[in-house]
Image 1 (cartoon, helix red, strand yellow):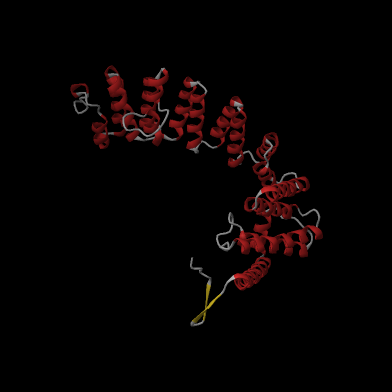
Image 2 (spheres, one colour):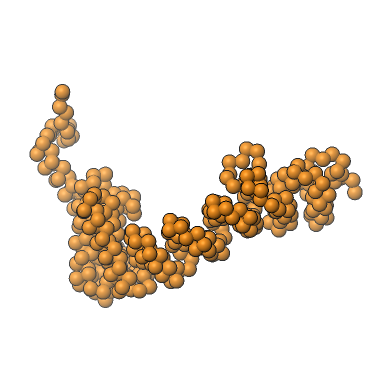
Length: 366
């Protein structure tokens, strides 16, 4: 079999390398890359320290508190080197795995030095935790476990020094495999920051994993209260209720869903061609969900008068009258009231809203 060797371009010619020569050349390239990163990091640190306004914003955002200027410089160097080599946070991380690891090792040296200069430098421990967690992803077996344990130790050291460090507590919860520890730290995060959306989502996931359905449902409802704009929370709660056989409770979820997201009424109701799961019509057919027509009528009324989504009102009313033609008079009364409030300029909307009921919809006869 023909053996191919790496080729490096030099000027107008090429040099073929193999074995030890190739390894040496690669090591030289990686060392030069690290030197380039050092120069860039040093330049970034100097520019940041020279801009007091930007520096203060940076310090506040990362909860950086240290009385040592030397420790701060070491921290900033470590922070920037991490940023340039992290596959999660850095957009310009080197393609070479070893080059990235070299950069991360250099970051650790600076951050370790920062904690030696200021043992109470809580923010430095968070960043060290981030690096060790990244190492745990890169490595396997015992090395992975050791790096994960070190990441947890760094995060714990950070929130031990700074008890209100939300970032450290959340990251600890994310890395820990102990479900009770996760719950404890996520609760602490939410105590400090009730609007921490990731913590809400993670806490719900843990409860579901542990089979603690009531706590999961309560947490979903809390998320709906705090973040009514997050449509996926409504859907996940509805799916969980169906999964647990509590189908009737889905009506409350969908009613709140329609209030906050009137554009989703079509997905909530369902019907032919719908790609959504656990729609009202599907739940009625599969599980005998009661009060579906009443809920559809209320959604149509709400869309027409409260949220101004006439398109969704049209959809709801068409489905309603197709299901129960006798409800056409109720729909007529809503449409006539709408016309009375809006005037003739909305006549076209009303005509489109008429279900195909012929003489039952004489909207133009005054």
